[in-house]
Length: 146
Ligand SMILES: Cc1cc2nc3c(=O)[nH]c(=O)nc-3n(C[C@H](O)[C@H](O)[C@H](O)COP(=O)(O)O)c2cc1C
Image (cartoon, rainbow, N blue to C red; front, side):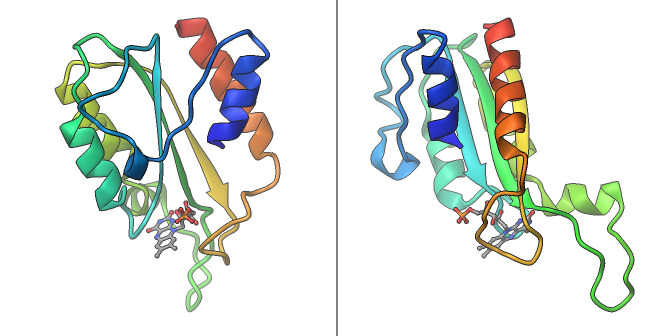
């Protein structure tokens, strides 16, 4: 997804660098017009390495950001066949609120967010069909607000 964001932004003449949080130094990031943070959802949350990275992040208040998360698509309960409610799904997908909590505490300014889903039976992907369209809409929104 990050590479797709990069590809779409490059088409608008915007230079994008993609880094994994494990290979980046949260206190030594160069300045940029915008930072985009992405995370998978593990057990309802952003994984520890993502949260630790965001906690240590040292960017000036007012810095613009956008966030995206991957989650499992909703599926009916195996026993009851009932689909989870919106409230139940929110609890299984706390990733974006957790990222926002760290970033807004630093006074950073959110421009956009997106969730993309993997097929419910697969914990690892592939992403559900149509994900490129979701990324396209996200990039358009980010560009409009930057
Ligand atoms: C161990 C594990 C736990 C997961 N827990 C959740 C979850 O609680 N809610 C959800 O929506 N997706 C969950 N997923 C699906 C992942 O969010 C999705 O497959 C993931 O974003 C793929 O990225 P990854 O390969 O980097 O984990 C989980 C996946 C794994 C492997």
